[in-house]
Image (cartoon, rainbow over all chains, first blue to last red):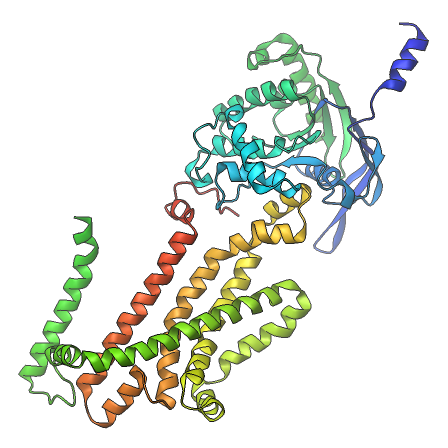
Amino acid sequence: MPAVIQNASRAARPPAAVSVEQVTATYREDGRVLTALAGISLTLAPGEFVAVIGPSGSGKSTLLDLISGLVEPDAGEIRLGGTALPASARLGRCAYMHQRDLLLPWRTVVENAAIGLEVLGVARREAIEKAAARLRDVGLEGFANAYPAQLSGGMRQRVAFLRTILPGLPVLLLDEPFGALDALTRAELQEWLLELWERERQAVLLVTHDVDEAILLADRVLVFSPRPGRIADEARIELPRPRRRAIVTDPAFVAYKAAILADLEGVR
Amino acid sequence: MTFLRRWAPPLLLITLVLAVWEVAVRAASVPAWLLPPPSAVGRTLVEERGLLLSNAAVTLSEVVLGFALALALGLALALLIDASPALDRAIYPLVVASQTVPVPAIAPLLLIWFGYGLLPKVLVTALVGFFPIVVSAVDGLRSADRETLSLLRAFGASRPQLFRKVRWPSALPSVFSGARIAIAVCVIGAVFGEFVGSKAGLGYLMTRAIAQFRTDRVIAAIVLLSLMGIGLFALVGAVERFALPWRRYTLDGVSGETRRR
């Protein structure tokens, strides 16, 4: 490709959905100041799926708290859609999902799914209608008026996921979203997340402990080192899309897995 | 079958206690002014129902008004205590101190200030009733799940939104627990208010009956007070079940995740 065209295409490329530049974050524990992240830089292109993997205490969850605006970094800058924003201005721009479903027990399935939209200023009634219209996408048609306590763990996590994607925010921050589920339910939800993401193509930053999950879902896998968290290595996953679960036995998949496991062994 | 299983044990126990009481009093020929048999109390309940019920109505109105005042005052104070750490430090010690003031000391003062009417009884009732409501409401507001709050904050929720959508609803079960305790002590508060000085009510009837050695009437009044307490307690429970329909599922333990910490 001629150099001129390459430059032109680079200039026309939309700004990164998320860009984290030289970010350091500390926190206090028992009066000591500990460094969670030390000078981390990473970018997330629009529609890109990036997984972060690393041992406990490598600041992975802190990274998501920083991007979402819950925490301000001690040093460095965070850009969303190309604009550097302070923490208070980042709130409400990324959809966040945790390992715990965090459903409100007094709200029904549709009411829980709608709360993200409500908080963003959509009228309650309209938000609930929008949630109801998408229950089929998450395989929960017929459960609109059930309470969370009546659902299984997998179903609850699907409600949480619908709450995450319903506002249509361009960035999803997923903090071990399937970590508390049994292996079968987890596999089912991973496949289902793939299908949904392939249709909607948000930028996703997924924190996980599960190497298979990272390779199966992501375009890139970042391996974090333990405290203070740094990016120790990065693997670009060139497996074809759309991907399905069967790919986990593919020799290319197994080779990625071996390399990432070796990385994780190395940073410990 | 379930009806029988639910009600047979308590009814059986009460019948047994009454039977032993009846037989023992008659066998030992205990004079009625000392301890009348349950049959005599029953007769008084039927024969003097007009007198008993009209006085019960006075006490009930004191309890209901006092409880309403306790609820309004208790929730208002809880919201203030919750609003800022400074208000918490200012108000909470006073709330606790209010409970160390003996009601027998304060009730005569209320009598001097407000006379023999309804108001001093309502105030005594509210004074003993508001404390459990404040404490339970403050605890409830503070028990909201932190992770849920931060998740919604990440979605851009404001402080008022977090209060309306998370903190207040998660405080409600606790508020209802406090209300159930409050309604029970409110009955005691109203009767005490009447003991100190009144012209009507079951407490008034009891002080009069004691002076006349009408022990049967005292016990009949106690029976009515108990029924009133049980009824009001059940009423608060019914309102709770109606207001918080989702509690049915979490209390059954269908899934333990909801309140996991």
